[in-house]
Length: 272
Image 1: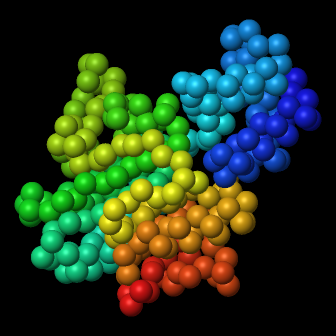
Image 2: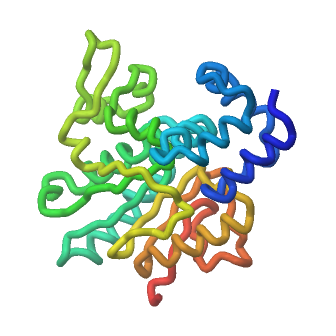
């Protein structure tokens, strides 16, 4: 069983390096790491953390992050966002970028890929036959290499797809393994660029984004970390750009520079 000291060491490490607040999650940390420690032969959590901090390859740190980040997502989650994206954001963007035809959309908590593939499907639907004239690629990042591998593979069970509209299922997925699974077709796969990225790091974008989806990730951050991240996101957006957060998440209205469009949809002022 993890000691208080070991628990504090791990939660401090995750907070310092990844902004993730696990200070109330002792049972979860113990439960998710205990078997891995036994399997690898470490006597206690301190030994494991010594390995994390001294491993030059970064493999043990990746394991720590993969175990301690929760990745619960599904197709059509909080679909009202995609309705708004298609009905409000994309018509604005199409007019704004009519000359460059360059859309810059970032999904900052890609998890196992459902969300960025959803964004790509909405884009394909909206642009239709004009899609080839536009750069509609979606950047999809996550801190966990484990979920990104699943996202890149793009393989899902029939149950995971059962909420998708039938025409999307037919158009964007192919049946594999005798109908036991479905895989994202290459046509959609090439529209999403998956990368590993820590939201605490400086944003590496050369150009500002038009829309950022950062849904259901800030629940892991304390208020100060969240405010700093929201400011970084604000600075990374084009004037008039949109931010989507999870429907159960909130931004402090008194401290956010964003204009609130709906409780989980925010916009940067067009003049800035």
